[in-house]
Image (cartoon, rainbow, N blue to C red; front, side, top):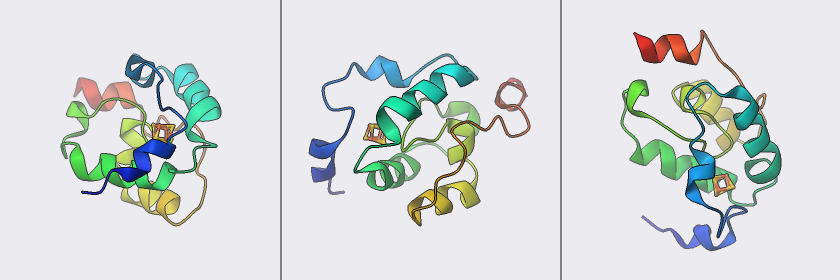
Length: 103
Ligand code: SF4
């Protein structure tokens, strides 16, 4: 898989731990999205890469990529919207991410 796009990432050089806030920490998700992912020129490439690489099981997904939380990346419609150039809300908590993970 081509990863040349990573050179253009808005988060290049940023501590990767920044993108792994505590599960369900909506304030952190919003901040990451506003500062890094929202204006990132390779957001779509990042999202496609993350979705292709991460496990299908939501409970095993972590971090913020492509401006989407793990639960958002678990929703095909939300992923498709970003890949098509739309901009879903910065945070979601669809059905409660914490509840999904606790199940
Ligand atoms: S979308 Fe976010 S996580 Fe992905 S490369 Fe851009 S800034 Fe980094």
